[in-house]
Length: 171
Length: 212
Image (tube, rainbow over all chains, first blue to last red):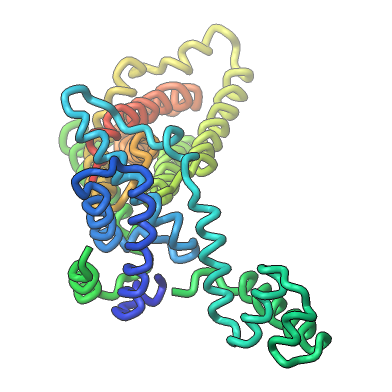
């Protein structure tokens, strides 16, 4: 996002593509499944993200900001479509909790962290730590000794941890 | 969805300067404040005792109070004008200048005999003061509404409230050019009431006029 704000169109396009996919899931869960409403809202939100990108606080992560815009667009749509009786906006409480964005943020961070690891180390880490395969099996498959696997997994783990601590929001 | 939109948006990307939010808000507040000052000068006129008054501390307390209210309001708007911005703690800071001036007012009242206390609170313009403050807030209010509509508030009532405080502080500043009341109790009651009215106005109309 920071590179986007500085005018890096390629980074910006990657960010928009990722947000599009995640917004698609966000609206698909919340909008009625008819007539492409979710698609319209995704489009509207992406255009709002573009138009209002100056309101992004450079010290904050990008996803809560993007979801706040999405939520606003969703509520705005609901309000407009219940024309006739005026429903003033109350964003504070109604919709604030029904949101998995914190979990989604964590997942995104971890996926990005994993993707940045060297391939061999990542495979070992996923096999041993996430899939809980026995170290002996993994070692046999990789053609390594058990202690070498343990060392490699530990190294990858440290690298992932330092990445999660250190860098905020890379794109 | 096709990639068309992504292509179009990323092709129209221009570098975005940091600090655009505060700059836009300051522009709106300053432009509205200038209009307000000009109107107060033209319609009400500056206070007749301006020259001798500048040497009195209360003269500066009044302007300081107005600016502090405007500053806290603007600081809260700066957060609330961004998507997801909540700023409850920033808004709560509005209590700091109010409590300070209230403390000065109580200290002043305690030092006076009961017979003159009411006079210190009411001054000679209590009935008009809050209305003038509110009226002087309208131009900065409009300036800030322009600024915030170009940004992206998602909590429109709170944004309106903070915007109203900022505009009210600026209105109080402009009106203080004319008003020659010098008692802290008067300031604590009637100026605060005028600024609170501007905040209430923002709270009421925020959901309608801050939509984007």
